[in-house]
Each structure stands twice: as C-alpha cells, then as structure tokens.
Length: 159
Image (tube, rainbow, N blue to C red; front, side):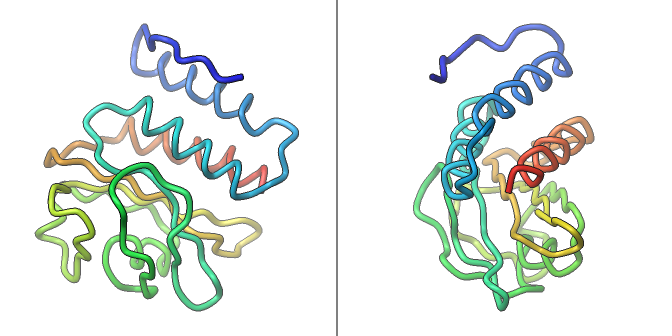
C-alpha cells in the first residue's frame, strides 16, 4: 500500500525517497500499464509546480497517449513533432524552458510553459516517453533531469 509521506531533507534525499517508492510500487508487478499509471501518479504527487505528468507510448508509428495525471491531453503525436515527438525521434532528453519558443510545439494545455521529456528506451528500442509539463517557465533544471532519467531507467528495467 502506498502512503503519502512528507518529503524532507535535501532535494537529493527527496529524490532518493521517490526512487525507493518507485521501486516498491513496481516490485514484482509485470503489467506495463499498471506500472506506468503508478509512476505518473507518484511524480504528480511528488513534483511541485507541474500541471501534467505522464507517458506517451510508441506504437511502431507514432506516440499514443498512455497513463497520466493532469488535464485531458493530445492522443497521438508523430515522431519528430513537438517536444515529445522530437525527444522520441532523437532518443534524447529535452529540457525546454519556454515551450512557446520551441519550433512545432504542440499545445495540449495552454497553461504549460516549460517541459521535460525523457525517452523510454530498452535494448535500443523506443518504448515511449515520459512527459512532464509546468506552468512555470524554466521549471526543470539539471538535478530534475538527472533524477528523472534515473526514475525512467528504473521503470524501463521493469517493463
């Protein structure tokens, strides 16, 4: 059972606490949708100043909306389009301080101003992306990136 706990200590200590919670949530669970749903809920609960946290899954052609927390979202995103499609096509993390300045940005939620997208890749194959949006410009920094890349690495290992 998940229990909400106060996240105390340094950012690093808080990140380590969340990684421990993720490991506990996905331990011995093989269902991809269940693990992604719990992971998006965990991030939505933990991360301050965000308005969307979730996954887009690669279906062999494009990204398709998966488990998430937030307002209803765009359902399909072509590879190479928007922040999610670009991160997926290039298989690299993108941290965007101002999404309105990103060429081809796809605005699913008008309140979003910054975004981080981490590709989910297993054995060289694209599975999808983790997408997190914030109403604040410049919300995501290097520490967030490192934490979220480790978060997704733990998650991908369970898929």
